[in-house]
Length: 60
Image 1: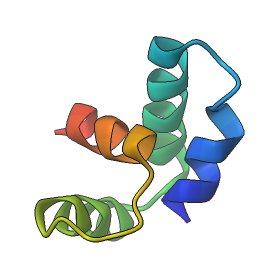
Image 2: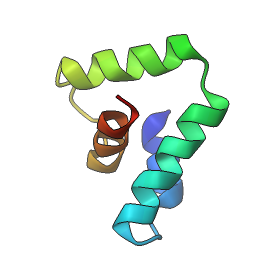
Image 3: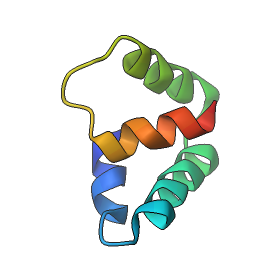
């Protein structure tokens, strides 16, 4: 799901795209979903969009 969000913001300049993904996740994702995202990033899960990974790191 986070890859879909990242794809939605990809047309923006990089910093704005990261901020957009962060804002979307903070606004629309419940804490459990955010925790699962961070766990996936920590585990180095394959297939995560690099923009999504960067946004997840910014959520910390």
